Each structure stands twice: as C-alpha cells, then as structure tokens.
Image 1 (cartoon, rainbow over the protein chains, first blue to last red):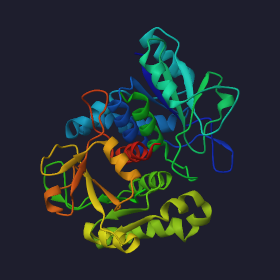
Image 2: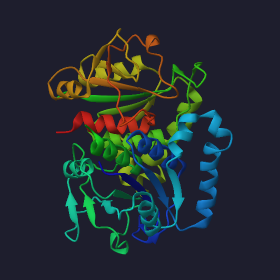
Image 3: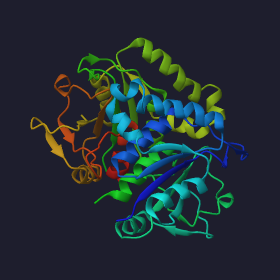
Image 4: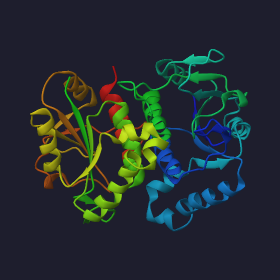
Length: 187
Length: 187
C-alpha cells in the first residue's frame, strides 16, 4: 500500500482570461478538502502558494482550529487539520514527502485536458497502483481555471478527468477532490 | 431511467448541542452542489428552508448569477443554477416533482445512522434502482449536525453512508453530495 499525498496549487494557475495568477486560498478549500483527505487516508494535504500574506492569514485560521478556541470547540475539525499545511511550492512538498517516506513521490496532476506529453492513468489504474507497494503518489489539483502544467516539471503523470452524465462538466475543486479520493480508495 | 432530485434541508436539523435549529444556507452549498447536480444529471436541486430572510438573501445571489451581471460573466455557473431553487419544505418539493413528472417521488434520506424504521439501500442497490423505469428518487441531505428524520414523515428509505478508509468519517455535506452523485450515476 502506497502513501497518498495531496496538493492544491494556487500558483501558477490561469484565471478566466487565461492570464497567469496566484489564486486566493478559500476557507472552504481548507476545511472541506482536509476533512475529505482525513476521511480517505491521505497522509498530508498541502495548500501551495508562494504569497506570504495568504500563508499568514490562512495559517492563522488553521491555528485557530488546531490550537486556539476551535481545537476544543470542534475536535473533528482539529483532527482533519492535523494533516494540513500551507507551503511555498511543489518542490517543497516533494522535500517533505521525501523526509517522511525516504522516497521520491510520483507527482500526478489531475487535468481535464488530454496531453500526450504525460502518461495518463485511468482512475482504475491509479487505484491498483495505490494498493501496490512503491513510492508515494502525490496528487496535484489546480485552482482558478487550471494549473499551468508545463511550468511544473515535477509532474510525471496525469489522471483521467471525472466524467459527468452529460456534456456539462464543471465540478468545483472541492467536489472533484472528494470524488477522486472516494474512487481511488474504494475497496 | 428514473429522474433524480436532490434536496438540502436546513430545517428541522440539529446543532452541535442537539437542539433543533434552522441552519444558515451557505454560498458554497449553492454553487458547489448546483455544479455537482448539473454534472451528474440531477433534475432539480432544492435548498429547503422555511426562513423568509434566508430565502430573500439567497434568492438574490441565485438571481445575480442567473439574470444579473453573473449570467454573462460566468455562463457555466448560470447553467448550473438553472436547476436550483429555494423552497419552504419537503412537501413543497414533492408537489413540484409531482407536477413535473406526474408521479410521487420516493423520498430517501442519507444518514450516517442505522435505523431499522427505514428500508436501507446500499449505493449499489440505489444505482440499480435509478437505472430502472419508475417513480423519481428524491434524495435528501441534512445540514448542521443532521436532519431530524422522525419529523419528516415523507422519508421512506435511507441510503447507506459513505465509508472512509479508517475511523474518521466527517465529510462536509458538499463532499458527501458529490461522492453520492458520482457513485449513483457511474456507468
């Protein structure tokens, strides 16, 4: 059984007008995704942003639920946030994972686009991979209008999109993370 | 193939101290769940609250994205909200469903508790049921610390909980809805 790590990338991502931006961390991205990660056995959940202002404000929110009033007010939320941290970059996440596991993680992006530059896994294949022994899988999600994959050379694979029942397919990142974690860890 | 309807109940639900309350509608409950509902073919998504103040404020948010500036700013969001409305009660939802389909829906609650008063479906069974022809399924989710099922006599069945990989199991309602819709409509 491999370890599963999760990253939510806030830079470099695109906005609506296809400009490169640093997106804002939202409170629901912290809580909903921490809770889903904890429920489905993710080892660490990294919110990734290079902006110090964001790190400071969002760090305070996490501290509130972990060490402040929130820690006694809602223990389930504290437990979920035990695995959550805000860090600078994908390379920093990889360093942390290497320290924890002694192995280089396989960085896999989730992407709605088909891109032949990457090995694309189906959900089924990735689930089998996770059950085997081997290096950890680091699953990377973009925010805004999607991550700029060519600017993240650490990405080695992609994971097939979640398909809806029709043409409309615009899940929030929180919904997408929840569904992937359920589908990838289902017995 | 049956029609699938979804309701998010804000009254009668419990708070942390097991008191009966009307919970507040959150903006993310509108958008994330509308988008997931639209992606997985839900016919209508009802936010259910008897509070007129809530209905008025939240109705304005939906209007903004449907008819106001938001409708041209973000068409995908407009499309998702086409199926979303705020109504008073479970009986009102049932009336709307009957008008649309000519049939009495099967009201099924999602519940983390095992309760022998109700017929409990596994996700697998409910998926098979949805593929058959027959009356619509109306899937009901609670907010806060859970709905008070005995106060909603329209509920006829329950659906098994989503299980995590370990003991921790505290998904947000947004995550739970997304996972159920994916699992119930998967081919």
